Picture 1 (cartoon, helix red, strand yellow):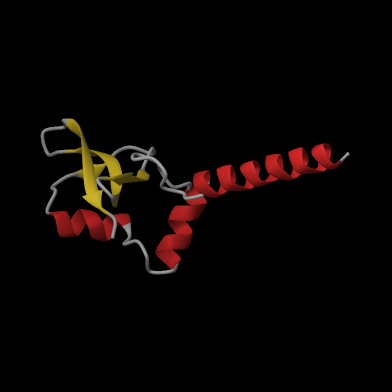
Picture 2 (cartoon, helix red, strand yellow; picture 1 turned 135 degrees about the vertical axis):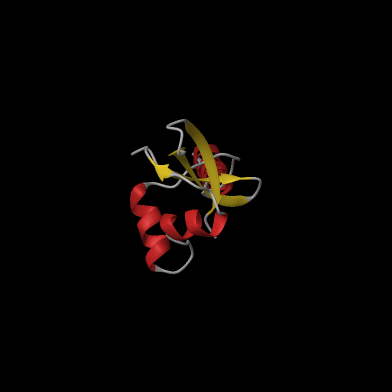
Amino acid sequence: MRQIVTLVAAGGLALALGLGVAAPVWAQEGQCLSKREIQQRIDDGQLIQLSEALAASGVDGKIISSQVRVCLVGGRLEWQVNVMDSNGESKPVSLPAQ
């Protein structure tokens, strides 16, 4: 009986440690925020608005993609969007989000 209790306790500890290691949101490069997380971080002042990031970057063009994302790249959060330039060409653009 004591061995079973020890085995269950050891398993529980291993599970807790495993979850603790996996818990950080940014465990891997390239992870992206959900739309809710993006809005919450904007509201909390942790991220700048996409329009502000676009204006500050000097990128000339219009955002054409509804698939706007904020992802961790090189240890920093970036807006990832598609922008259409004055010639009608579309290109992916990454903009600082912090």
